[in-house]
Image (cartoon, rainbow, N blue to C red; front, side, top):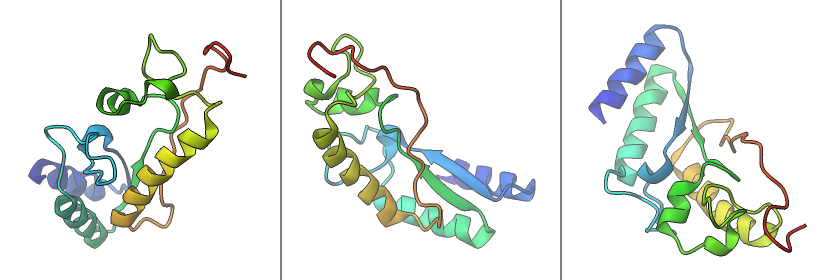
Length: 137
């Protein structure tokens, strides 16, 4: 965390006022405790970092990918049925809207609980592939 705080000070000193933070497996998800990896931050560390950034005038917006770039989720959770392509576990199937929304609502809710940004959360912008799962769409 000291290196991250030093980075925050540096970019704020250069006039930057917003930091988009993509945690992936370093966020301490409590509802999905298998997602956080070995080097995950604690919730107290996240809250402390956000408070530190707020004092600097640096807004921290968490980035949670919504469809693609979610390999770390598939590696941790038994969600292979949600994958767009079971050979490439990097994207959830957009046709599994109910299951996808349940998972990501929980992830977004936890992120929102530790961040104070008025913008809230970035949902990622990766293009998705439609219909590669047999029977989907």
